[in-house]
Length: 370
Image (cartoon, rainbow, N blue to C red; front, side):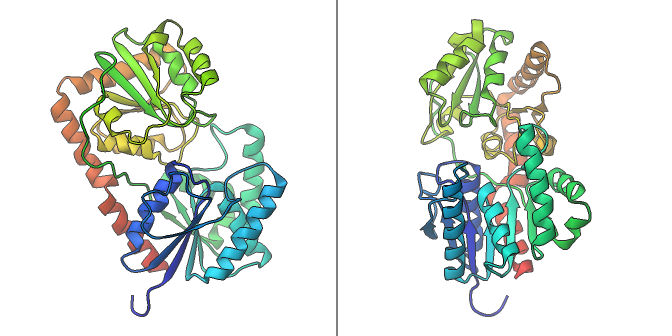
């Protein structure tokens, strides 16, 4: 690609640590070799702490229900896009993905635009009313926006969106670019609370459905403990709620709150559990994969896309006893030769989700667009 370096604007939402900021940081690393990259988001609260490119803080881009906040976010986003005059605007996070397309449809800015769906905004796992609103909104915006580069985290989510949009999808080009993880070498493990140890990394909230995991503890053997870390997991009311759900297994449930570094926790684990109602391509699961751990997932849309993991399992039943049996079958199989099985898992991660593989795919995609 000859000529001056292009300017790419990556637009995110919330500045706290989560999958979308992690994806944007990794994307900026991949693109800065041939482009000038500017990241726009809410003020950084740890999610962009590793960002090495220019960052512009714009309040109002995190998802909130306040009409005043939405209006402010829209005006601020349009102003920064107009001011930056980028060669490509790439929208991430649910609210910027909506506001940016609305601005395009209204003619408040023009120019090459991509968007990434970090999970579908409707369907299985979503609250019904919001799911229906999102379905109508997606059809409307797909009809009214100029041609876009639509990016999905896996084939399943792309196919479902295409089916939902019908002929409207043909106005836009559709691509798949998954996530990567970047844990690096693991430090010494944190103290193990039991002989067999399951871990979860995710904030408290509707999406992550940590309550379902706590409810499984009475059905797991007494030498199995479960540790959860993430924003809100150490809140007193949340702790009380989950301890009640854990029942006879309450003493084996450890709620750690947000951790600056999850590597020590992963190093102490024998398996990673995720009971989310919906996901995109969860970076927490990829980090566990990178750490050489088995991964056990709820049947959210896209979970089967992680089946390339040699020790993965998608929970197939709502019956707690059957789910506990599935979990233990994976963990016990892994522990028959932990060192060899961990090495096999790490090798498969390197093929599919290492930063180098992600960077090559992202660079090829953007160079094709430009």
